[in-house]
Amino acid sequence: MSEPFWVEVLDRHQAVVSRQRAHNGSMTVGRAYDNDLIVDDPFVAPLHLKIGYDESGTLWMEDLAAHAGNAGTDEIVTRMRVDTEAAIRIGHTSLRVRTRTFAVPPALVLADQRRAGTRFALKGLSVGAAFIALSLLSTWLTQTSEFKLANYLSVAVIFPLVMIGWAGAWALVTRIMTSQAQFSRHVFIVFAILVAFFLIDLATDVLAYSLVWTAPQRWLPVVAWSVLGALVFAHLAVITPRHLRLAGGIVAIVTVVAIGVHISLRLESERTQPQRITAQLMPTYLLLKNPVAPDAFFKEVDSLRPKLEEASKKEPAAGGVPFDDYD
Image 1 (spheres, rainbow, N blue to C red):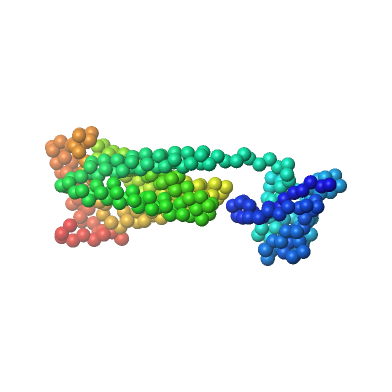
Image 2 (cartoon, rainbow, N blue to C red):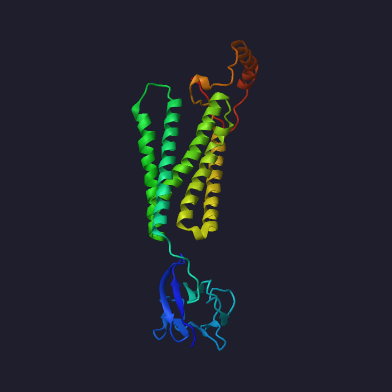
């Protein structure tokens, strides 16, 4: 007697939707109601597949529809040996064949899942606390006016709540797509990546003030777009771990386009507007570069006077910004 086997109908995430057992060693698959497995797919033939054992006990699949691409290939295949590891695609439906000799993995331990969730929750709390501490530090370093509690509340309470809402939205999508929310994992992802970006942002501010090195600040928006892309990719990796290459490619393309648009807009702004120099004030003990002596400063100003007088006699370049007496 032939060994029994099972044909499983899979969803787009390769999860089992239904499972049908073949009792007599063969099974037919199609849309017609006289099949052993009825598939509700308009791209599947009324009698599409026959799966069963041959005389030697080998499990085969026969394509009864006999048209190109109906079994997930680009060539016409009318008969092929069944691989119990791979999925079979007919129309828009994915099938998988299993025999009773197929080794299933051991059962997951519920306590392990709970411990994993607890670990991510603790990690999320840790990086969230680190983010709030860095935000408060940055606010304190750049405070040049009187103390205002609202400035500290916005970075310590409001912004973290917004980020938790962001993580909750991704958790909702994960719950819809995979039946598990993974909220603590998404919270950890948000605050871990934000802490990394905040450290970069704080370092560029300190370098700009301490060493008058503004090049890192100039490229900080590019880093910000890259961090945003990494954040979205990390969330997608939780939702679709089977399609990381596709998700990474899409995120990379969108990130590169956003960076290109930002750079082009910045270059256009610098071409049509006068250059503006901004400074982030910080405590004086962070100032590492010695200020220019007054005599050297005024000497440099005097050396620029002939160049300014010569430039004032020339017509402004096309596309330049006109100046008036108030400038």
